[in-house]
Image (cartoon, rainbow, N blue to C red):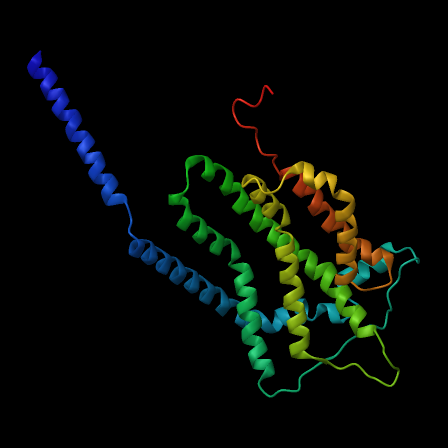
Amino acid sequence: MEIDNKEKAAELEDKTTAAEENEEEGAMSFWDHLEVLRWALFRSACVLAVIMVGTFIAMPYIFDRFILAPTSNNFFTYRLINRIGGGMVTLSPDFDVQIININVASQFMTHISTSISLAAVIAFPYFIWEIWKFIEPALFEDEVKHLRPAFLGGTVMFYVGCAIGYLLVFPFTFRFLVEYNLSSSITNQINLQSYIDNFTMLILVMGIVFEMPLLAWLLSLMGILRKSFLREHKRHAVVVLLVSAAIITPSGDPFTLMLVFVPLYVLYELSILVVRDKKPKKGTEAL
């Protein structure tokens, strides 16, 4: 019996030692983490390059049918508003903007830059996946359980924001600015680079703005933001959102203003739903 007990103790000790050795081998140094990050960046760059080849080839078609679509009154959103406006809200039927180019290399450089931008938007889920795989080993099981759906939800909301930016925010901002006349003696000629800069900026800004519920949720996990705070200041938030919507789409049409305000307000309400109040510490629940 004593021999059996000694053998079991020795076996247990060997297993413990082996586990400790595996733990030490599994521990990564700073340079190991740097190497993992380097390969993650390399893979991301390869994916971006592959997608960019496809977007570069398809760009002439994408440019005419997608990027330049808001310059014509045949754009989907313009036709939809004229259809559902019921005569109360109508847009000018002769809206047709010609984009000009004044630089020799501008069209070629725009071809490249828009291909990269579109490829980055398409590859966004893969970038998020690489970030997730990099930080996941450092997280606890409970943190993984919470952050996995957050990464997925953040990706979906980014695309929803980009879609809202393309269908609502940019078209009406562009249309207002083009139709705005300081003097009848001035003729607007929209430069290609100016158009692309505004197109890219407004769509990406809306994509980032739609990350507001995710940001609010993360701040609540850190104990910085509380659900009660968002509810108490809802009236102030409505004013801020209305002003923001007016700045994004500076038109005198209340219908257009509401098209931008409503998504922003829905985002605020969604933030209230996802935000968590900090749980009371043990021992204070009965107080």
